Image (cartoon, rainbow, N blue to C red; front, side):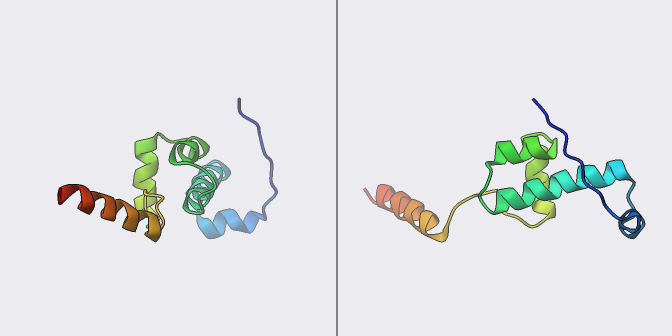
Amino acid sequence: MMQTVSIQLPKTVFSALRKDPQELAKEMRIVAAVKWYEMGEVSQGEAAEIAGLTRLEFINILCRYRVSPFQYTPEEIAEELASINGKSSN
């Protein structure tokens, strides 16, 4: 189920960004989804849904915004690598 959110923006925003209202609304959804994903607020699937994209399209957008598609902390990566290294030496 979708809900509509309405916001007011100055008309100058549209000319400054060179976008019509529909394009700007779509871009705002994408940017919000990317940022919320980057902050760990939503999963990749949820972010894709917010952005109105497939998961693959969203991953491509993440690359465009230079956001990693992987939500791992440095500690989690180190644990994974240690786990892999421990298994391969057996």
